[in-house]
Length: 203
Picture 1 (cartoon, rainbow, N blue to C red):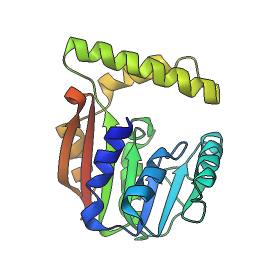
Picture 2 (tube, rainbow, N blue to C red):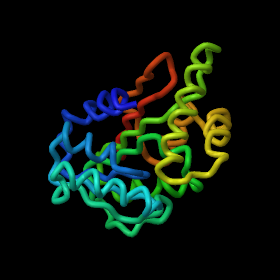
Picture 3 (cartoon, rainbow, N blue to C red):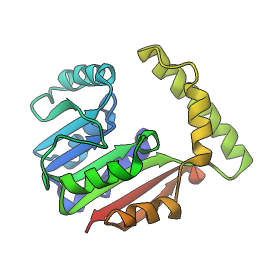
Picture 4 (cartoon, one colour):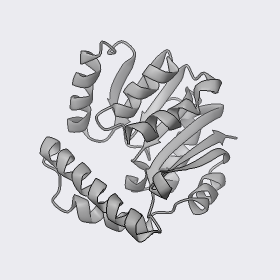
């Protein structure tokens, strides 16, 4: 997953974003990687889970990045952030958990500057049987590790594997984002289609 994150973030490099909003930031891995690769002036990591972000704060502090990466509790569907305040926004493995996808996309468009970039990295429903088997193993390990950290819901594994089949992906997700005033700049699949990257621009 780290290689997917690094490859995705590098697509933002030529745009030189100075302010980045990391949505559904969790424990801050995407925020840290974004700062390391893009060297912006600030990264704001937002999430609804204070518990996850507390872990992220410790990670950031250990790396000496507390002056550059900050954490804030925010619901993506109703953010308290100012209009046109970020050059780029990132969502890594979090968009499928948005309870109100339409409202969240509208809010992201609102807080991005005109021409701002939205980078989404998300897992897909693999089509090939052997890829599905590998993916399920990956999800099981991921959920086990997350559960150990956060005492997560025992149904998390079932939810993640089930959500793959009903969450829009590929062209379907791109169409939804286009309806919310984003246009596609770049689309890429990773690891035989297990994950996809969407780079969108606010219009």
